[in-house]
Length: 358
Image (spheres, rainbow, N blue to C red):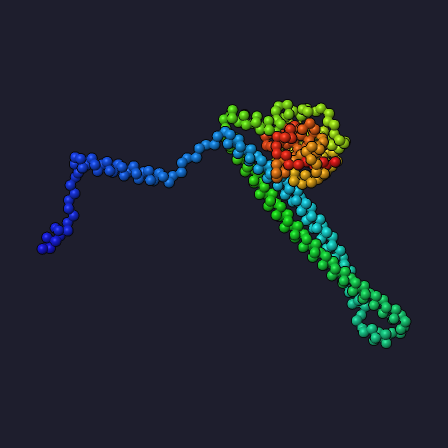
């Protein structure tokens, strides 16, 4: 019986399929494999197509613009860091001077206390009773009273100086924190600029030589470029500036034509956009702030229809670009990396405003 039970539970032997049954099974297996393959592939993202030359050019333009925005922020943070550095140095000098005066006052107080100690410690009434010359003693007592008043005045002065030094050191700590924050901003903006410019270069490297040449020609056209405009002698015709200072600023800008754009540069060998306008007006004896968004408030705001040679013209909604107007709808500006200082029409970029400096 046990053998019969083992035989009853034994798995039946599979017989190989032959003929039409085999063909049917093979067809079903292949269909299942194809279905499984299509299900597996359904979740995979299709390969992203490479950007066209037009898309690359648009991305490069945007990266250059973003880099210029970051450059102006960098310039502002650098100016604020310089101001904070000067403040920290001035406060350190003030603290040193006040500490020296405090030490002098403490020394004088110590000398006075030593002199009083050496003069004796007898009660004044006893000293008067024992004195052989009461009048002389009273004179000395009056002097000691005055000395006591002097000592009290010195103590009040020392306490006042200690309080002042504490306040100066607190201000120095605040300026030091401010300086650290500006330096952190500098590092952040510097990294952003370098990253965007590197991305732009990588994108340009994906273009063919002909496509890149076409991009450079188009960019030059937008920014007033071309061989004649890269020449420092270009556009040297006399300009009817409204005053001598404007004429000097324009003359300086003409002399900078052909010099390279370098972010953060203020001359004399390279410039960014606000560095050029600042340097031009500095040559005329006028001090401008460092950034586009502060230069626009450095003079009287004027309408585009009122433009005169020497005015500052600003572009984009974020006030991220500036040029020096020279008349006839033209300006001198530092356009972007790879494009030197040049003459350009003011209507090639989104106009944001204008300022008359002097």
